[in-house]
Length: 309
Image (cartoon, rainbow, N blue to C red; front, top):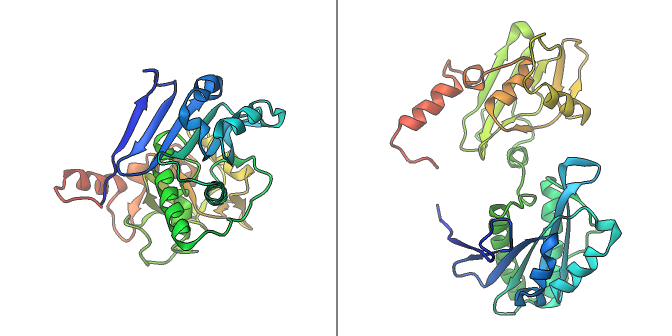
């Protein structure tokens, strides 16, 4: 495992104020600020350079979702000033942008990064993309393209650290990249073992893997339709997943099915949705083919001196 050192600097000494971020031995530099701090951003020499930026804020139609806009500019601040006056972009409250400290980014480089970032955001599908079109990357010399791909890799590292996680693939997407259907399959997909909830009497069968700290229930999982009268945890979450079409009806009036892989914040959240009742994920999930619960598996790892990949 290779680590990275990221140097953060609070320009005003305020965690909610302007912030800069740099990776050791990287020529790039990232700045973050609120929309209300555009005047202070304008005073920064970095804002006068060529760069790529992202506007972010709550979606006007659903405040629980994030809306973003990705762009580039020869002088980043001029683009930000224009967006501040644009009534169609009233949603944004924060901005993050990346420039080159050695001033080697050109207009073509900026357009290349913009195109690639839009593609990454679309694929991750973590936020609503405000951009109306998706420009193709402009042709670059092979060496320049390699440089921009490295620059992009550093952006993908820094942005999530600063609270902009919309470029990161969802855990269920990481699973899908390795298999299209895992139910009944023992093929390894990730470093996590396979966990199951198997309740034949209730017609419930679900498989899941732990990916990047989230529990991903695999597609085709069969779950209980009717919840228990006392069920109150994660009930609204299941209703939301049904409304989004991620959990669907089956011919069996007692069973619903996962249309696709779905990630949950915890094993308990996943177990509650599968079993349609309040549930402790540490005891409900078990290693496939064994009686070892998720909790036992986790405790064993915590007590072990072996390094965890």
